[in-house]
Image 1: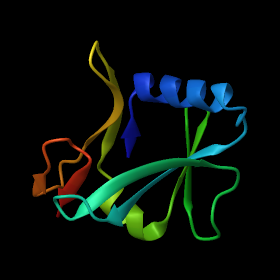
Image 2 (image 1 turned 90 degrees about the vertical axis):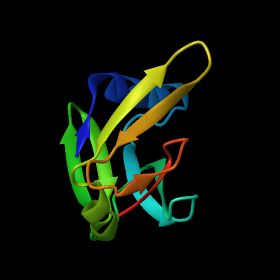
Image 3 (image 1 turned 90 degrees about the horizontal axis):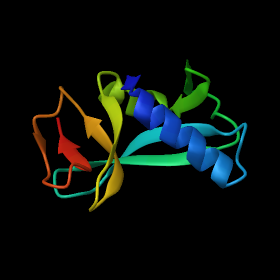
Length: 106
């Protein structure tokens, strides 16, 4: 899993803005979306018992073992323009993705 510098910076900003400094970024997948699986992100204080814990430039990242199977080659980025600001997911293992980029199939 790779996270771009822009995505790391934005995640750290969100943590600070929401008084969640010291929390980690949970990245996962869940059933749903138009392609079968959806990416999900949240902030949590502590990792789960079996989570893979990564430290990427000072950002703690928590991923449960099942989700990691789908996410190990993903690049997470941050895109901001006049119309939208969002985290992006580039998954070379995805067989198909939806138009909005938030769901995929393997």
